[in-house]
Length: 91
Image (cartoon, rainbow, N blue to C red; front, side):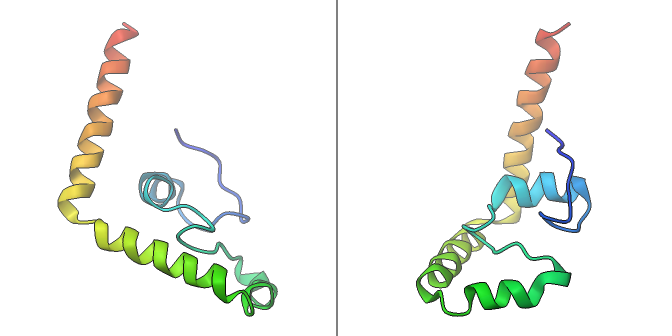
C-alpha cells in the first residue's frame, strides 16, 4: 500500500517511508514526527514529558536492536510472496 505523504508525516521519499518507516516503526511509539519549520513547537511540547520520552526511547531502542539485515530481507521476501499469491489469485 503506497499512501500519499504530506509534510505532516515526514518530508521523505514515499517508497522509503512505506517500505521501511511505515513497516517497522510507528510515530509516537518509536519516534516523534516533526516538521522542521515547527521544531521549536515540538520541543516545547515534549521537553517536560519525561515519561513519554523514556517510553519512546525504550520502544525505539528495542525495535532497532531487533532489526538486522537478514530479518529485513526475510520480511520483504515474505511480503513479495504474499503479493505474488494475491496477484495470481486475481488472474
